[in-house]
Length: 277
Length: 330
Image (cartoon, rainbow over all chains, first blue to last red; front, side, top):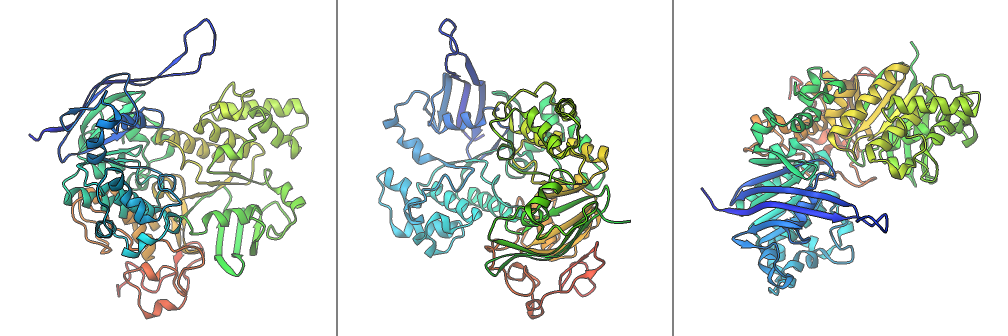
């Protein structure tokens, strides 16, 4: 059994809201209420949930972009929960992120080669032109793409740039936050294939967050279903998809329209029902 | 039987660049028709030309007729179009926040739609009708709320209530659930279905999600590069696609069979977990190839594809491809 690379124990994150009264305490939003899971080395782990379920908060804490209220996150044997920023450089190299919106996550005023080299520069590594060309090649972009700006690329190509940037410091863990939600169907397939290939070739551990269980099922081995700040179900993707145990998961699975089910006469009323057909 | 919507030879262009070419489209009474395509395929522009809401420098030519309206919709002036919009023809947009007035209570907005078209006799009657409509979309007690107080799904239901207020002959939905979560999407889709069924309205449903179209619609048109490349009944088009683009699109979106076994489409290798893909990207507007718009991404393209493929089949079921899938010579 490989070692767990990410170990999350009883993670809680509360956000205080602005006070509404002088005499009462400020109301609190419980974004995460006791989340625990493990991701083993080389595993493809999916996190599924709808907007507001806390999956983005969880990612932010995982990437040490936010602090937990209580609980513990151990990445690669190091407890990162209360580590000061200056001691997080190992995490910044080993864990890299790909975001949903490829337009807002790339600086429009930087050339693509500088965008891709930036994680290296920040970590104090020499950023050679060769490494940038190698990365462009790995994500299927032409070598001259480095001289251009993000707005000159289509959505799918921009997502490839994001992936190249994430791979620059040779991370062990790739965290993808809804990487294909903003893409067209034909391009979505290309980007999913690319992520899948890179994870295989580079021996990465993948944490893939999406609201779409069918995409997660395609990409991941194991999945955690989140609802209202808690993980309601974990299991292999096949199991969770075929025999969802928790009522919320059942509702989620039933609501996914698929071509195969639609052609056998599934109506919109069936999508609303709690049980899969 | 006369069709509710008849679009003939619709061409939309901006400064001599054709964005939509020769679109033929009919929607019968009570029929649910889907328009699918990726971004840049011209599906939203087609809808906007029907509504007469194209941006200023974008020009539409051709013919758009709507039953119950005795004039041509293309080129009709704003005064006449504003009588059609919201009365005979209504639209649900993708982004509900921009479709609603942020400074007006939602009850007043729904009531206003009926008062403008004088379908209710008094302010009072319109408000009562608005409350009923909001209840039908399962939003009781939101009459006095403002749009920002509602969630995305709730706002989209308000927009739906607004669109259905005057029992339009045709409801156009442009990606109405793309921004919503799946469980919310299921609810909104169901409300759209029930809304059009109760009014016997026709539905033109625009989306890039094949599974949603297959669930909601009876007939489907596939658009690529501003042209309709294939059309027909949903079961026919999705089980036996003829155009190579439709075939590729179905294969690329079918995550299910990619998991269970290799998809037999011959577009790309199917190692485990690999999806068949359509090579390349959708070209930017105006840079589609001559002849068949799909030929620079098509594995079956030959010299013949440099000429525009003729429409094969009937107006409601057919395709435009020189080397169709499932043909004897393929």
